[in-house]
Image (cartoon, rainbow, N blue to C red; front, side, top):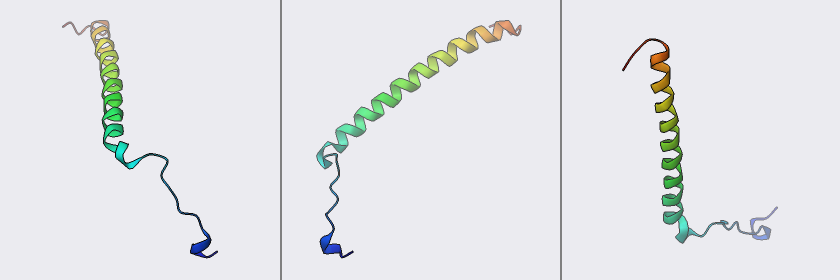
Amino acid sequence: MKPEAMSRYISPANLAAFPHLTMVLLAIELLISLVAWLFMDFGVLFLLPWVSIYI
């Protein structure tokens, strides 16, 4: 197949939206990690007394 006959690939996302998309995805990732940290923190808080490590 000749390159002239092929259609050019165009990205579905606008290049001007990349900085905003980066910040949105970073905020979502930080929110998910905060929720995971809270669950892990409360899990340790109840696990330690269960194994007789009192804080």
